[in-house]
Amino acid sequence: MDLTDLTLTRRIAAPPAAVFDVWLDAKSPGSPWFGSERVILNPVVDGLFFHSVSHEGKSWTHYGRFVRLERPGLIEHTWVSEATKGVESVVTLSLDPTGDETVVTLRHAHVPDDPMGRQHQDGWGFILSAIAQRLARR
Image (cartoon, rainbow, N blue to C red):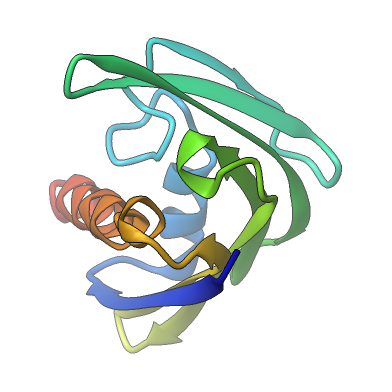
């Protein structure tokens, strides 16, 4: 199976610590875990997560483990789902301060190079936009 890496960059009008905290808080709008049907989230190194989201009439489960958590600048976790065909892909979120903003670089490595795998680009873009909106209302 061919694999690819996806990269998104977004400026968010908040300090890195605020972005870091939203990402790891399942109860915070904008978090990748927010609004899931079911969430198990243990955001510590080697901690596991599981969440199930409803999309297009189907329940999609995702799971993984946290590899690196370096507050406020780095979050790295694995990501496994039906869309990764069981491949343990890796999501790295780098949070770099720029004045009063944060430049967020999200890299999703080892995603299947097919339409379902590449669809993660849109999903992560949606999440980053939701975080930006959430923090703009602070």
